[in-house]
Structures are given as structure tokens and as C-alpha cells.
Length: 306
Image (cartoon, rainbow, N blue to C red; front, top):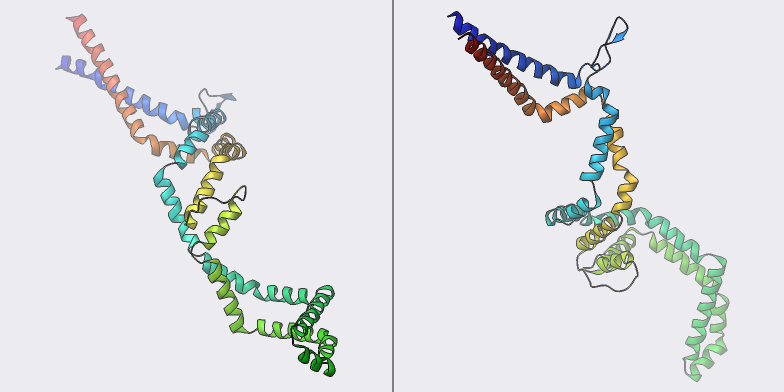
């Protein structure tokens, strides 16, 4: 019986020691969070490895992310994937379908200011003078188009002269009537509706945006769909300026600063959540290794005694 105990105790003790040692080693990655002192002397291995090497760790992770994960080539490959483009197009379509609604709401807001601006423009002295001049020219053309007898009758009654002399008043009256008419609710609604129908006729908005977004203004093959047009332009811009965008963001500094700003307990939780299963097996393997070492020692001692 004593021989069996002498044979079992070393492997079991080795398993316990191996397990506890690995558990402590993993704990020492994170704890303690701050240096510990004994009689004014800092205890070795405090703080833990991660708190002590946080700055170097953050720098290394930032460099790795910038070098291996967020490279222009990887982002371009990602943007080229069909499923990503389809998801982006679906999201984009949710907004483009609301363009007529947004346009109507915006037009309702700016219509009074636009009408005031138009009336103010027409009442400017130089514009008013041109309208008066154009009105008189129209009267002259109308008179010139009449027969000789009709011209004689109008001239004898000085109708044309009276119209020309009162043209400033006529223009003022027309502008006032235009303003009054424009402020009527049914006219405002009709103008906004007509503008929306003209702008959002199938193909018209696509052509307008295509012309505005075209780099050289030249005619291009019609895409026929607003979502495809906007998506193509956005992805083209992203592909063209991806290096500049990454350089502006400075991924390495962003990751480094983020890690350095995080609470160490949160970093511990994140790592443990990711590595919990691996750490468990490290503890188990420590116990197995300790057991095997203890078993080897026990067998070696038993053999020597034999």
C-alpha cells in the first residue's frame, strides 16, 4: 500500500503544481495592475506583463493592423465583392427612394424665399426698365403687323402711344399680379408638383446627376438607374482616394491611442473572452505535463529502489 502511495503522490502533486503554475502565469499577464513594493523595493514582475508593456503592445498591434489588416489592397478587394455592393445598393436605395419626398419638403420651405427673390429681381430699377423697354417693343411689333388701315386707326386714336406711356404702370401691375398669384396655395402646389414631375421623370434625374458627377462633362453611356449611378461614383471615389483616406485616418495611431486609453480591466475582459478556451487548455496541459513529470520521477525512483 505504501508503495502505491509513493507511486501516485508525485504524479498527482506534479499535476496540481503544473495546473496552479499555469493559472498563476496567466494571471500574471494582467495582474497586478500597478507596481507592488516591499520595504520600498519593487517586487519583480509587478505590474503584470500587459499593464507593464501596454505602450509597446499598443504600438505593435497598431502597426500590425495597418500593415496586415487595413491595407489599400485588402480594402479594394473587399469593395469589389458582389455581396458588399448589393448590400450597399440596398441601403442606398432606401435613401434615393425618398428623394422626391425630400425635394417636396425642401421646396415647400424655400418657395416663399424663392418667390420673394424673383419679385425683388423683377422690381430692380435696371430690370424694370428692361421690361418696360421690351413691352414697348412688343407694342411696336404688334402695330407693325397690322394692316395699313388698322395702323391708321390706332395711330389716329393714339392707342399705341398711350400704352407705351403707361408701360411702367402696366409692368408694375403685372409684377404685382404675379406676386399675388404666386402666393396662392393652389399655384404654389402646382408649381412644386410640376417641378418634381419634371425632375423625377424616369431617367431625367439620372441624366442630371450623371452630368454633374462626370469629371469631364462628356456624355457617357446611360446607366438608367440612380442607385447604380451613385454607387458607381462612390466606389470609384473610394478606390481612387483610398490611400489618401488611410493616410489621413492614420490607422496605426488610431489603434494605438484607443488601446492606450482603454481601462486595463476592460482589456483583460476582452482578451479573456477571446482566449478563455485556449487558456483553459493551457491550464489542463500544465496539469498533464506536471502529472507526467511526477509519474516519470516516481517510476524512476521505484526502478532505482528495485
